[in-house]
Image 1 (cartoon, one colour):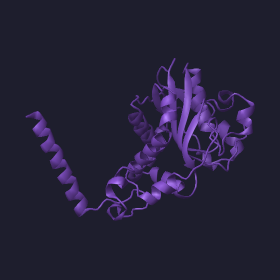
Image 2 (image 1 turned 135 degrees about the horizontal axis):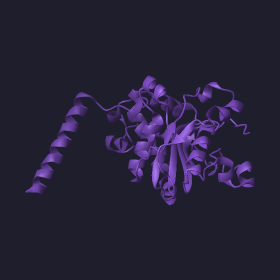
Image 3 (image 1 turned 120 degrees about the vertical axis):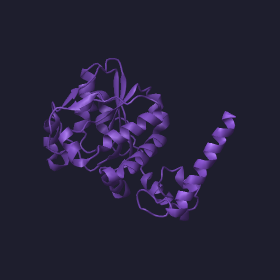
Image 4 (image 1 turned 90 degrees about the horizontal axis):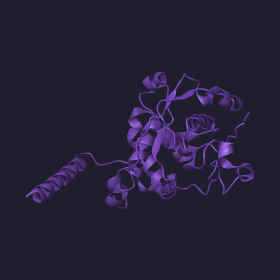
Length: 258
């Protein structure tokens, strides 16, 4: 009897979705094209609510240095030194370069109306790097925190939304292990050489991280200063290892470290 009721419930849900799609045809979360007009509605829905063209554009990135994320299979700086000593984290994965279609997606995801798109980007990130992410044996996912003043003005935090979806997809807990101690100027408003000083001491720990292998998540990597500061705080708190995942990296910038 229970099995029959469950089948009826699923059938009703399917008919309900079909009715909604008939009245309001599903559209791509990024370009707003009609998904029903695409090659296959079923295939498109499996692509996180994005059309085939947008998925293709978002997945054009080539090989990247596993240590710092720069385009290419490895960079001189990381080959010459231990990656965690240089970057403060062990390894990094990215969806792609901060430009063109991915830049549009990241900017849209910074607003409350873009929360669904944020989830789609997180799903693409995980599916692209699932084997590598799972090989890290992560104990929890930590979002880069946003100061409460900025959060109240923006209405959302892309890093938190991405981290929530990544944690769910990897079946590991979301851990709000970090807090923003002070409201710093936005990194992209400062000269590259000033960005490390801007976030030095800007983060604190909210909970015990001793012995944990953590995945630190943000939406965009520019100079890497914010991720370095957060990774250092987690490491100082006794984290066994810190890895990084982000949607995009601004490859044109090079950080001037102290």
